[in-house]
Image 1 (cartoon, rainbow, N blue to C red):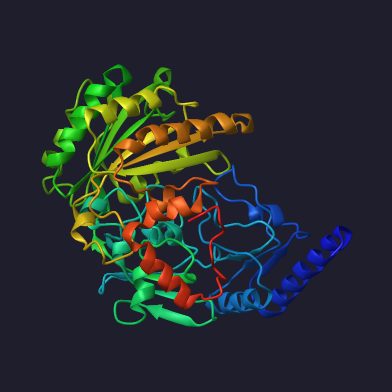
Image 2 (cartoon, one colour; image 1 turned 120 degrees about the horizontal axis):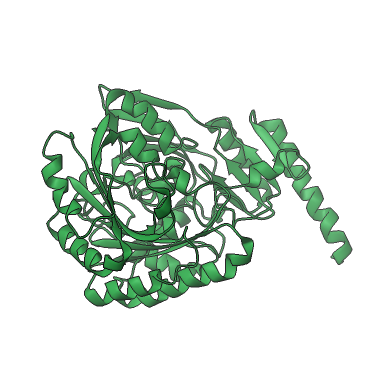
Length: 471
């Protein structure tokens, strides 16, 4: 076809999809000419600048079924948007169809059964608000603006994961629209392969429209340790923290950040944005039930700049970091799972941390084990049950002129830490533009083959096949 005919032909195809969606959906359909187009294609990470042909903003599962039917008929590239908070921006695609679930916000809590049913557009902050009315929780992410769907499908790290497990471990059932347009309920008895894959297998198996989570008693108040240490003592503090994690009870989930002092009103202004070591830990039980004793080792790791430890509402804890990662700034993340954090690894990590390109960039070391490791390795698609640590290299910046330098720092730091890795990486921290084949092996490990078979069985024509740049 001559080049001059390609653009009109493409425009006509896009218009046909948009027109058919408008005739079939109750929700809003947004094409390139729509006044809300730029808002609809924008996600949390300002580094993402993709231009889909059309956004189908679904009002419910019936809309999703229609959108899948139309996608199957016209075969555009398809992406699925929940919270739009994933660092790689997989919620939006170029020149394709975005099946947007962000308006599907229903939440129903059954306090007697200790369950919550939540639609896929719900964020963790919205779910926590409803479950905490009953002093119940399901383990969620560390940023309350994160969508429940993407985080859970990738596994789901959180502040109490050593006590309550990953987010995916609390999923009792889920509703999913598969590539043939069928609405399926997946649990251990019905559609067990889908149930297995949706708990840690990432995207690409269908459109999950809702989750049923099991809930556990937690809150409304929780105890947390938050201690800032002077950066000149970083190596000693990190080594002491590592040693303390080995004896931490499962009721404690320790975390360490190499970062800058937050511009928090509770902190003296002269300390803002200066480098420091932040030790955090959350007690996953009643604050008056041994929390002080359990958290004490996390507060005794070296010279203290500030100790902000105390008891806080669970919803406040869950939203405490949200303002520090605002919408529209630029982010790039890569991570390693590690079985140990030896002295050489610590020195290497500190060397690269000292080269951080911006005060917003950081390194986070999270501890697994506890409830995460008690789940059988093959019980779900999450493939890293027995790792002790996850080290995440997180570049953050505002100025587009910093793009190359910030991304290069994160990649170089990740490369330098690779020799200490157990060989795995976390799908929710997979950076933009990474090689898909390399990432799939690192993300899914020995589960990659089974995931491939499940995807092929439920989506033989690859309707939901992730783009080549992403796992």
